[in-house]
Image 1: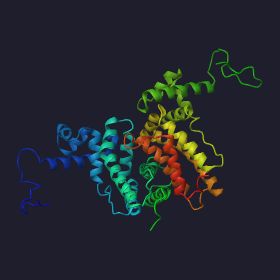
Image 2 (image 1 turned 90 degrees about the vertical axis):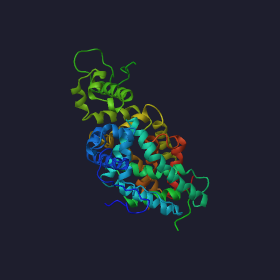
Image 3 (image 1 turned 45 degrees about the vertical axis):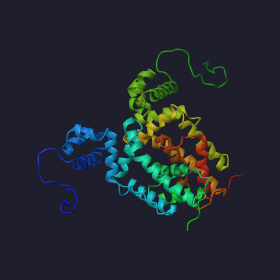
Image 4 (image 1 turned 180 degrees about the vertical axis):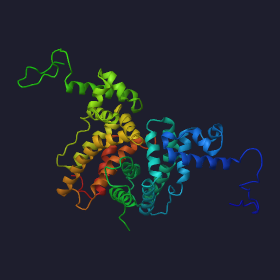
Length: 212
Length: 212
């Protein structure tokens, strides 16, 4: 990878070899990569700051300087690895947007290592307050805010009736996917088709305008 | 507590003091009580067969004779303690039955110690295969079977359209409640009213006959 050093005003991302500290962004990327590898290989039970630091070739102090807790680091590693699958778009068509976002999410959760890692993060958060805070602040809160934005915009456009509590819809749609993720072997599998059915039931149940 | 020894044909539940083995049912009840106390006080992280056996005044071997794993014992303690709240009824009116069962379940999960204990059991099952098997076999499988029975009967009566996949409805209704249980502080609270709204959205979404 060549640094864009010749572009006017660009800051070289990989400076010439030199002594002293590695640049912040380089360290951050190395730690996130090491954290993702550790999470996917060892699971959350084997995920320690010490192990990640050793793998990234940095000190534990360096890791702690940038991440307040083990949970925060695990969550950032997860969302950084899968940021493309976790992207949200608001195209102005609520059914299409929900099919896309929940379908992509279901496909991600049905795959390895994303599905088991997410189930473990959510599971371990039930007995680990740091992890619970990290998953809430770094994952659920911003994501839920974005999804509610899509639904509220649809309500303002009249696609969803004004008196509907859209938080109930979100709990039902995402909850259905978590149900299949967390309790495998009971029910059908978690597929993109399942996610689309869930979206259709939620929209019909809310009295949304019928499929175009 | 007096034993019903005078009722004709009744088996005394507390026989006179004697040497030798305690009757099976007495031991089972003592172990389940001790297991529930341990689970609610120490959480799943502090739940060990050793601790339960000591509390119940029996040997670890005795506990292992009746329960194949720590997870099986924890699950039986939970379902035994809350069996009244977990009861299912099929009265022949699907909306009333679902309001009742999901409403009661939401109220249970919103209460202590049931809610935190259930969240911990479900969470720990994500990294503990014995516990995952116990929760699947001793809790989810029979319960899901019973709920699907209610929905399938409603479909046969014509209350729910014949082409609806009722497993999707179950994932959405129960998943919505688990979503609020497992991710507190993000969303509205888990209440009986929430559960009833969830049932109404699922039934309307499935095209069920409207509210009577």
